[in-house]
Length: 448
Image 1 (cartoon, rainbow, N blue to C red):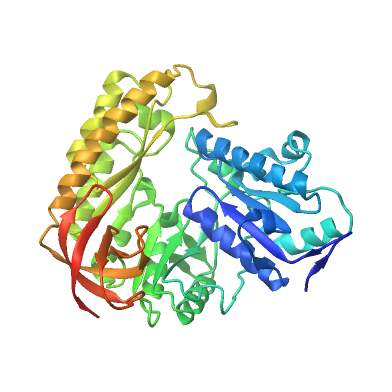
Image 2: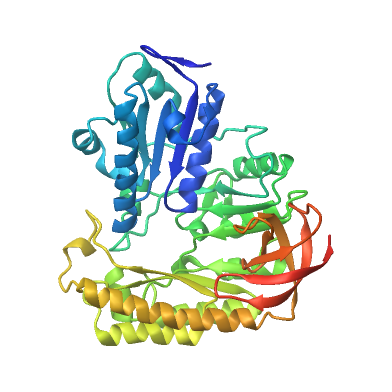
């Protein structure tokens, strides 16, 4: 049904998503809620009756970007006051009513665990209530929507298996904006996977702030490794991935999964954040650099071809030159396939926000540049080792250049190539001819 408002009919929605894969999952869920109500997506936002901004506040830059986008959308609303303008995600959860006070043109502020209330909240808005803020974290996860058409044409998709985090790393805002850790029933996760597969999805990535701490207790205990086993047996599922893992919870059972389950891709994203034990302790990470190195050795022993990517932060309060050198040393020792590197920024309400010994912006920028240049050398070296090798690629679509196809190896490396036929959604064997820092290029030698 359509939403009948004071002077217009809400027919079209526009959602813009910033931040992590979890936000992308939430945006897809939101879009399905809206389509159940009879709304349809539209782009550009100027043509929409409902605009939603899905935000991230993990880092200051992400939050600033979200508010910048909000400013642009407010300009659209000023030209068409009948538009419903809403903000959701981590910034919405963190700021709540403060956003309405700061941006009076906002109509809706939707918290991270309130997405399933969207339909009723929109009805409140169109019945005449001027502003709605819904940011309750003390609730169960939202109910899954099984839309039988939404994911048609998509080759890869996400499934959220849990929400929230119990770790309280000293720099991290996630427990405050996503709530305490709560897991979904395994049967519901499997059912969602089966629904995606019916629509043509070949590869599923399991999402959570800390997926390897997943556990479901109901007449027994199902851990993350057990959940992977269940999904590995789902018919017609080609590939399984997961993100993100925490080193302190990475069990031997999970390590064995990389050897035992044929559909589990040999790639793990395992944030280490810092190479100094002093900084790791201040971060409340729960492991040492020695323990992290040991985990990597066990992963590579169990699965020699496994690709390892990670997150790392520079400029944490109190990080000395020696601490930073230990981070560089760890990177050189492990040789990650790729790194996502960031400058530390204070997050409101976290322990680290009040820590002394803040590092200057210029020093943080210098350290980040040194670290990124080191990793670029390592990534390029590892990618060049694949030249001349035949590798399996799942074709996801067309590359940004348009005429080339693009897909990923099982180790999550992007491969671009030419082909005369439409092979989207198929597995192909590609011989790698050229290696770049961010991608590979090759020729198809056969398709499966």
